[in-house]
Length: 158
Image 1 (cartoon, rainbow, N blue to C red):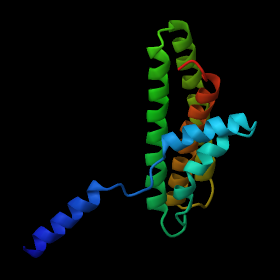
Image 2: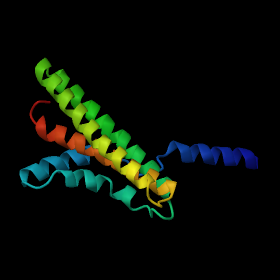
Image 3: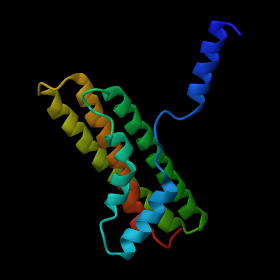
């Protein structure tokens, strides 16, 4: 086996496994139900899922932390789509439309705040990597919070 082949094989094996801990939607859903039953804030469930991304030192590994949050945002977005599909599968067009409108505007409002934070940070002395990390973290939280609100509002509709 040549050195080039070993290096290529190693790279392929590394790429086949996730670089970051993924958001666990099943654990998140269990957490949501437990928080609701205990009359506790459900947003903590989203924050728990971001703990791995939060563990990256922002000063030493901003790119890794940024990618982690981007993956988290993508998972939250997938969770939103899955919940909307489950609601749609029940066949009530009005409830489906309401859920779609609610999540759309919740997410847009959240993301608008991320843009505001990014613009304000651009006026500071923060390095570009820190601003990018801040926006990725905000966007992941925006999607996670939109899913959390959807989960609470549509309980029993899925």
